[in-house]
Length: 245
Image (tube, rainbow, N blue to C red):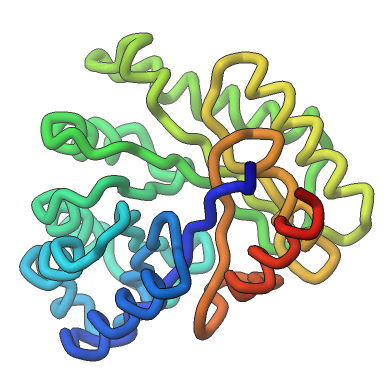
């Protein structure tokens, strides 16, 4: 069975007609999920719950709402209070998923997690490295540190934890970096964790394509502008999966 593909859409302004056309195009390309990259909007005040909820209502597939923080490659720099306001607007719109960076401090998670869970929004906790792929030991340390952060939040129990998705994205500087992601995918899957792990860049294309076959979740593609180095058009990905079927 071919992996599911999430099409990442850069939402560059609040023009509904243009954005709905993008969502329709992604649906026409048989996207399994759609990620709205809201940090591509030049003015953060335009990221309203009304805009997001309208886009969600007009999608035939689940929506991941992401406002990527500038400390992990986001396109819009905001203050902490502005960032919190945007995340609150996303929560109010009730997407299927929300993507939050692991690098936020514990106080941030204490603020936002209760309302996210109350609204039955599934959580993707992400970590991005745009420079290289650390050793497996270093990556395990990143995961363990973040899990400790979650353990300090009272409302999280084993049932809630089991639904979380951990997204760890690195940059390949060698073919061997891809093998690290495969090892981690297999190991974390054996631990009953939901994971998305692959490498960005041209050298990371093989893990972008194949890691989801190991983890059983999904990978990311594009239909227009790529939102990450090495992102592939969804139709090229579909052709590849058909060839190795």
